[in-house]
Length: 305
Image 1: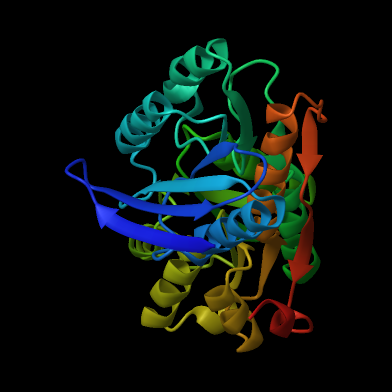
Image 2: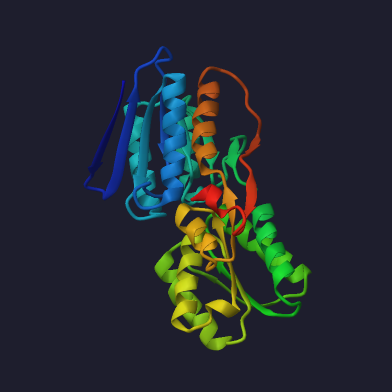
């Protein structure tokens, strides 16, 4: 039997729990950076975790801050849930260094931990997720193949305290530099659509000849597209995102976003629970588990809608 609970606590956290009766008697916590109700990426992670919990017969608690990347909210609710008792934690750390001590204490008490989406700083903990540097390099190569050498290009970065953001920034910068692009701006828009639009407005006001923008996630890419539309520049600028969320796939299919990089968020949730259960049962797992990436263009966008 499966049920879901949703409530808002006094610490302004979104909480949903999935309780599935099974023979293991094991309780696993999934802690993400934001609620699935607000971001299709996290919705897919949650679905993968829920399906795995149902398949393997474990109890699953899903926690997420209402505001994406609210690190203090993530820490407080994870601490509370650890105190209530869990066997394993599957976590996408909002700020790896900020959660390191909390997770180290939990592991000292016998709780098993795996990282998803963003790698943490705790030694010896398995990371399950995307090779973000390689994926961003794939995005850069698309721009190199579709924009003249020496063109002005920009990079919209994520939250740069997160390894995901750093790796995507590094991978895109290296790829664009290698093919001779002129990188005129590298600015954080904090994974946010509205900030993606405002940062792009600033970039294009100072760089009217810009020919391409790589955004480190689809939310920022969609914001960039809106800014370009507002300035009648969309037809002249290649925009590449990252995640292949359904809204982005629709935009790619419509010919607005040029391309995006699909990462398989469902696999992160499913494989996170699957491997956390293995650890809880005393099994060993690999240090790194790559969940895969693929370039999404107009030709295959329908597969991701």
